[in-house]
Image 1 (cartoon, each protein chain N blue to C red):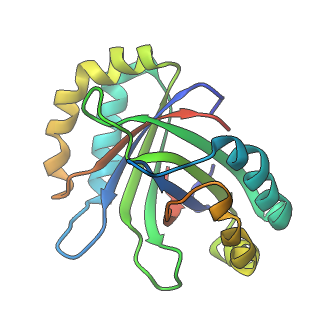
Image 2: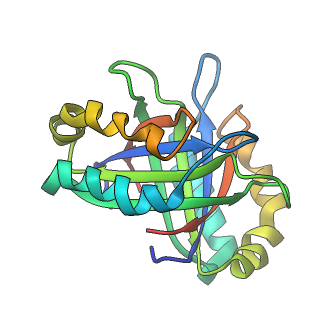
Image 3: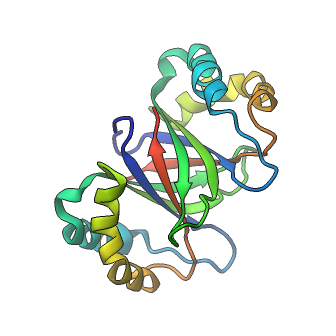
Length: 107
Length: 107
């Protein structure tokens, strides 16, 4: 993605008792969000947590989902307007409260 | 990046008293790491935190740096072998302890 774009990162904490349904997330949630937001989404990525710095240590996040937007205005006019419907799907695939980060792409 | 690749995410917590020198990170640290790891690095991205889910709320991370590797073996044989030199540079640009996540790219 190019410099200046807006990146939304949604990170789902890992840990005992925490659940995350990767199949639902990749095959139902992401396509639903992509459908709602249409052309505003310039790219989407999903990663599954494997580990952390120390060998054998657990990943801080079970999964991370990222979406890229052309500008903050485009993000607000697409994701912002649909945030309620998008968030309402969360309990269908996880019992965690995700960490949400909005960033500007520098490199 | 393509499915099955390994992604290293290094996330620097935001907050009162926490420092992060983006100029040093982008212009000294990332090039130094890229030089050490050479061809093993298939891509690198850097993002600057702007906010979180609630309007006006601070970003959980001041910055996030990501590097992609072809496989876990390639990651371990490059980053793993240079981890000590790489980590030794951290105090030159931040007083935080970063959150480190190793992930598998799914989408």
